[in-house]
Amino acid sequence: MVNTKISIVVPIYYSANFMPKLLEAIDFEKNKNNWTLELILVDDGSKDGSYLKIEELHQKYNYIVGVKLARNFGHQIAVKTGLSFCTGDYIAIIDDDLQDPPSQLPKFFKYLDDGYDVVYGVRKNRKESFIKRMSYNAFYRVLKRMSNTEIPLDSGDFCVMKKIVVENMLKFNEKNPFLRGIRAWVGFKQIGVEFERQARYDGESGYTLKKYLKIAMDGIFSFSTMPIRVITILGIIGLSFAAFYTIITIYGFFANNIPVKGFATLAILISFFSSLILICLGIIGEYIVRIYDEVRDRPYSVIEKTINA
Image (cartoon, rainbow, N blue to C red; front, side, top):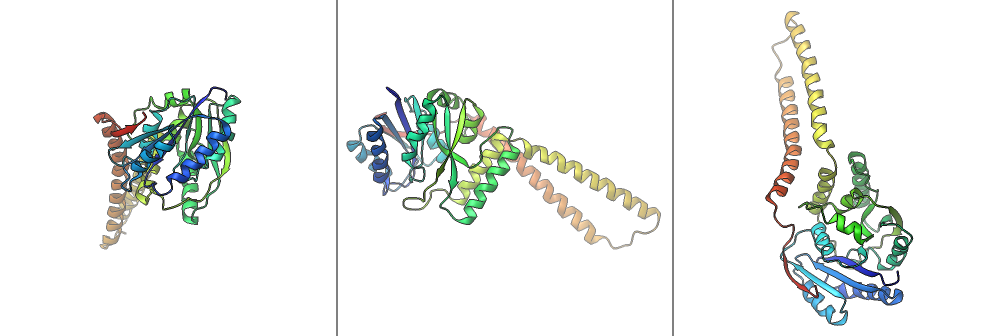
């Protein structure tokens, strides 16, 4: 890593209280490993004075590059914006809550020295609730089965990459990016390394249920065409069922076995297929919404101001 410049991207969201602790941990690794460092802190529309804290910390740590987004655009957009400011040879992405420990970075960078292009963290243990752990496990396994791209299990955005990988990732102009999927899609020589995911240092996660669902849908609809194909399969099953039921009905008619009663059957069939149609329209709508987002060609983020950029 001689003469290797390092960029670290950290999306910031309501982190004013524990940002000094984050900087202490990063600065410790910088001094210990003699890094030439730029630390890119992207404030994703926080309203707790996070950007003021970035300005304050910049007085002490002059390698900070501060970026303030004009509003909350979401975690993935904040990371992508940060990546566009990177000038380092080795580039790392970590979260602001110290769950992705900076102490792991030297170990990850060693793999880049050895010839790998991407090193991503594989979460060995999560210090989170049982329901969250089960939800994460289910999502990654469902996505793996559905996706045409080999997206590693239990790997988040915590990773280090060489500059060439980031340059290719930034060629994607998607307005709803799923970065760990894009990272897998671009290829190069990649390796997963297990690490112990720490408990959140302070406060509560900025990810609400709505945001978790959004990133899950971004992953599925950006890297799988299976949902749209499931509609075709359901249509074939429905057609087969309808044809079978039609044959039974015609046979019963000629055999005089059809009673006058039939409202319950009719109501069940109508409600079942009506619900199926609405689900299918919803899936098609998700793809159409993403097409609409792309054709409008709006910028994926708006930057209000920067420090040292």
